[in-house]
Amino acid sequence: MRYAAGENTPGDERLRELEPTEVHASLRWLSAANPAVFGADQHRFRLNPPLPEEEVSSFERKHRVRLPADYRDFVAAVGNGGAGPYYGVFPLGKMDGASGQLESWQEDNGFIGTLSEPFPLRESWNDLTGMPSEELGHDNEQEYWNRLEGFEKKYWASSRMNGAIPICHEGCALRVWLVVSGSEAGRLWHDGRADYTGLRPVLLKNGTPATFASWYREWLYAALDYVSASSSSAQ
Picture 1 (cartoon, rainbow, N blue to C red):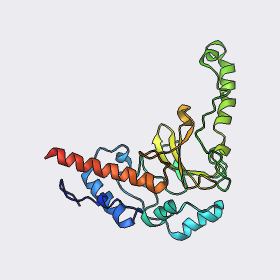
Picture 2: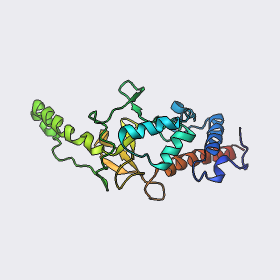
Picture 3: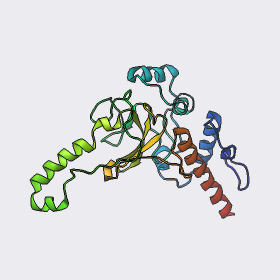
Picture 4: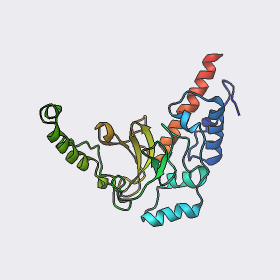
């Protein structure tokens, strides 16, 4: 369905609870409009089919967690990944792999932590203690690489991401994680360790901490508004 300039778009109702019918209608409209939204060339505004309730429950039993309600409802009633911010939302239990394709992840695999353990952070973190200097690399290359290996083992420790699951790839190995255990449960965290900027809470445009639903809504509204503004300016 296409919408003329000035006509109400699906996002005008503001999708308060990510109601499946409204989300799907909005994504169909965006798919038809094909706006130049970052990452959309990968997901093309298409969602995967929802995950059966039994599979969602099986995931929770296996990892001894209860998924945040807004994310759980999305996976089970709206879509198990696909269209979303950046390059889209990962299907439950999957993430970007070394080959560039989605791969299943395992708990305590050196990257994912223990989901039932509480997420350890409350505020932004970026401890670069022990990171070797570039000068050392010039003076003693072998020692530089030895120290870097030790630093990165600590910096990338899987226990640092206890109680969280990866849900989105921003590009360049930067990711968004959803906290599922501990006092931060239900909130999103940005993982910038690939460029040594550490971990920090994802914030909405108004400065408040993002939940899955608020983060997804903000992206969807921005895409809808972008198309509406482009249509108006073209007339």
